[in-house]
Amino acid sequence: GVDVALSAVYQEAETTLGVGGPSGEDQSEYAFGASVGFFGFTVGAGYGVDRDIGGVADVDSDQWSAGVKYGMGPWSVGVQYASQTNEAPGVADFDMDTWVIGGTYVLGPGITAFGGLQIDDNDLAASTATRMAGKTNTFFIGTALSF
Image 1 (tube, one colour):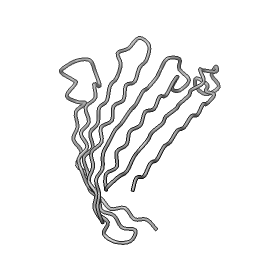
Image 2: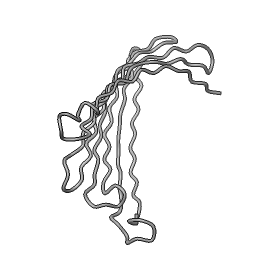
Image 3: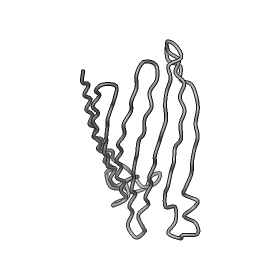
Image 4: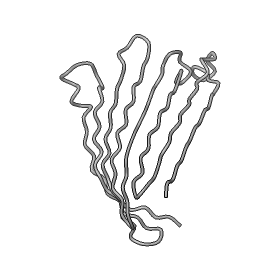
């Protein structure tokens, strides 16, 4: 009655700064995650890091997320929270927070309907007057076909 899933990834890339430009820092990424399913519930979390993005030293990003889903029969509902911080030398950190609340319903073999709400809050600028531009609510609905 218990399902467990684990994941891990690491990658590294040699980069150049612009076409024909000098070599930059090697960009690297790593991430890991885990989920546990029991009695119709699935709980999961993940964490990832990108270093020297685009070959630029100390331009970094850290992300993490956690969520819970409940499903029985053809339907499921869930909620997830994700946070990301981007850092670069000489500028303020850029933070993003996202909530996703949604559900799915299997209409038939290979056909799933889904919908929900995504709530984003990010500090696009340090100014309070422009901070509201970083708040968005997105309603979504759709179908997925698999064969």
